[in-house]
Image 1 (spheres, rainbow, N blue to C red):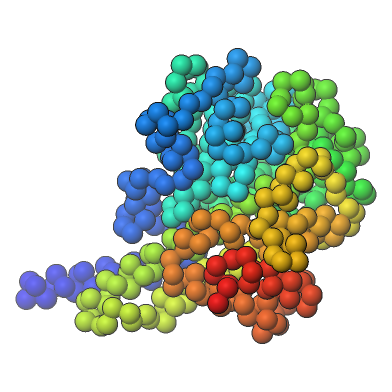
Image 2 (spheres, rainbow, N blue to C red; image 1 turned 60 degrees about the vertical axis):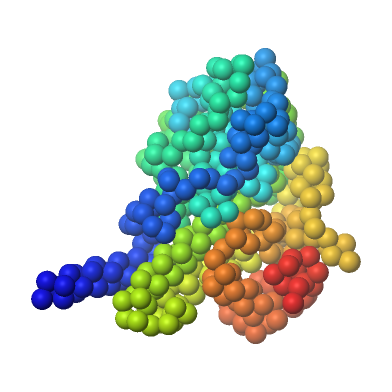
Length: 431
């Protein structure tokens, strides 16, 4: 009888987990429990790999008197300095040192984000682990002898793990109504932005250089507290260079490029959706395996509930990577040519010279609206069951077998071009 009661207890416990844990309740699960084991799993991202090389004396980094370890880390991690964006709102761990005259600089590539604060105590680095998603690090800026990379998790999670990051440790870009002190006026609200956000709601608390015609954004300006939060958007529009208050001479680059900002917004949520899909699949398959063992089913049995969870997470990722609901540009956007050229030069090209990194910037961000991040290690490291579902869903869209309004923005020529590019350049689509 006791054995029977214990078995029932285990069964009901597993059933409860299976019911409560789905793609929309990842935040309620313990990221440090199996199968995720977020904290206890050794990271395998670009920063962790660099740390290992440093420990083995395979690479040597140089201290810079003006910027500390920043230039050397950018070079070692292959992050272009032209990706520089500057945020002056106090929305970071080093708030006390961030202000309009001392903005925080963010640099990025496809897999790593690096934050630098003038006279800051440490570099802030977030890297994409192929399985675990965002992993956070700091590098001591006071130690000029040896770069000390330390993992930093719990203090980051108050902002970097919520429904705004798809309920997984992730990335986000915020747009606020900044006061002249750099403090956000939270009475007026705050937004977490991506490629779907209307331009008029973006870049609050950021410096923005580049041209965007008649469109307006919240960047470069402060809240007029005497006029109930009014923003003088005109004075912050279409700036060729950083305003003098930003002290351009302090930074590696004289810009906070609008195109870099737009790509930054897209990337951050893409990574979050990939991590959500990965965690959802691993949790669902882990629970399914336990249930299969209890009920003496075959190892490959998959319930309708498990299939729905995989399908839901895959659908969200596919919608995002095809730029569903992307804000339509009503004026051309032009940033600094050095960044745009560097970004596009990294693209894998098909026999006709086309790449998913080709920019449009006339009515939309990319010429071929499929995220270039499908080439990243994290996307291709998705568990096979959900990666196969993502592939099937992508092909259904590209072959015009999915006529949902969600993908109505993709014309027949878009779909054909994307399918041809992927077919020639991406191993997942070559068969």
